[in-house]
Image (cartoon, rainbow, N blue to C red):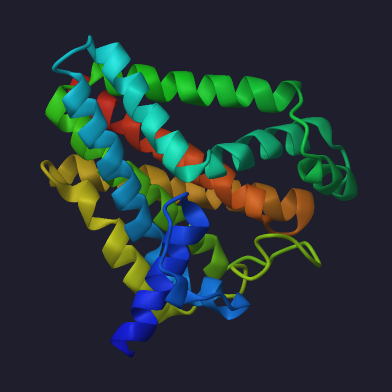
Length: 252
């Protein structure tokens, strides 16, 4: 692996999943995105770190609930609500569609429906309340861990499922991921869960594995595989699951 090539792939991942400007020399080729998938969890850790910094800084001026909301605003701005859009589209598609073609057609519609709005509000509210209920240091670390690990879980579908659209904005990403590439992604995305309590980290990882299997089976049954929106949906559900598992562990 040539260092400059890997740096290009990292910047490709950063530019695809965030609004952060990347150097002009990076360029763009469709195959860059598939190769860049291994760096998606690292980009997630950076997004989570931004949220954690905003949260900790805001705690000096505002109550914890406001600080959490400001951190969420920061991550939404830097990512352009990329994954949240997938969550809303999936809720609309799977909630309102009966046949495979109905689900795919509804997901492709840029307008948000009732299922999408409800799903988005519930997910964001649960994140807000879960993080606000955690001790500040733990909440800040979980922001980093959840953003990184949830993206690892989402791209794990690239190793086992088929992309079901003939075309789509996620098509360049949606090639089968090799074991080595996913192993690199896992190294970037999963160890964050194990600190400061490795037992809690293993519990969060177990929840992610169970959810990953259940969600994947549902997608295969309904549409035969996944779309880009499905990956955004998975990232959001996995992130939320990490927060809720961490809160349940501390509260028990």
